[in-house]
Image (tube, rainbow, N blue to C red; front, side, top):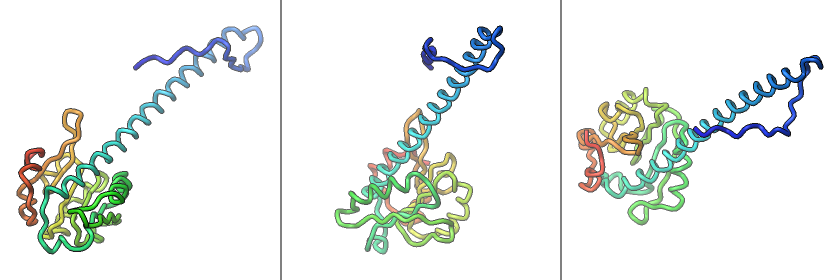
Length: 203
């Protein structure tokens, strides 16, 4: 990482040392404050980059999820009324999906309805259930609750695709990708287009 510029010479740092030691005291105090400030700035910069990257990831995920609506076919009973997406718990993707729902529709005329639910017991009939990484430990309970309902379960934690998630977001070679569990999807009576299969990592 590029070093920060030296503190300008005209910056004065107040000290409370005896006058006969003021030169060395000022130097020591200046070096300490500068190093402390530099560490704080580096940590802050790192956190800002992490937050920005995290937000961008969920923005891209919301784009993928909208694309899924075009390449996945649900049973007739799930093609009536609003296209419903449930989001389990707090996650940045909730706002991204709601923003997307304001400007997009499914199949040209179906309004997208995004709803946050607080726990597994709140899961109900919908088209997509999004499970963020902070709820990944509940995947077994989620699969039991959803059972044979034709709900597309979308997760974002390594290993959940194998456990039974239908589509699982991962980062591969620094890029966002997704795993597709064909057996789990077939069990839910969902049909995946060949185009989507070719883009996915099949498991």
